[in-house]
Image 1 (cartoon, one colour):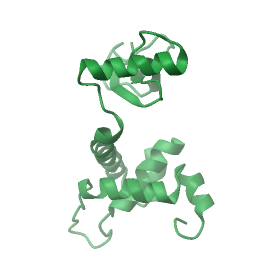
Image 2: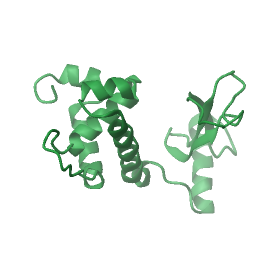
Image 3: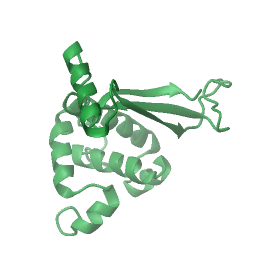
Amino acid sequence: MRLSDTDSHFRYLRMSREKFDFLLSQVAPSLKRRHYTSSIRPNISPAEKLTLTLRFLAAGVSQASLSFSFTISSASVCNIVYETCEAIWSALQPMYVTAPTSKEDWLKISKEFEQLWNFPHCIGAIDGKHVVIQAPPNAGSEYYNYKGTHSIVLLAVCDARYRFVLVDIGEAGR
């Protein structure tokens, strides 16, 4: 599908082939190849790990469904998603989420907000998203939110050009 049907590839992963190849080149060194003692299942390649994870993230497919689709155990799917998300964050965070480190950086952001959006003295636009989860055992009301579900909160601050400045991932849903 990746090579012959680019439209299907895009619909399946929500990503062009070129972007997939770029992301794979960034995360492949971090994705360990697991060596199994059994010859029933060959090693899972970094490309397959990335495809599985992107399908999980892009379409909200359950890990149980991915287990059947990729003929991998549910436990392996869980480990692959975790490992690949860590690799994506480690590879892309330095490129795309750079926190200001000096007074001048903050002043530059403020100046851009004033020039582009007529918002003086603004140093960032913040937004958040509740991601519904199944609460861990014995969590009580820790992950319970005002929407009546259990969730974690993703927060981000962007500059005037919609570039991420700060990101906070995974706070309990209060």
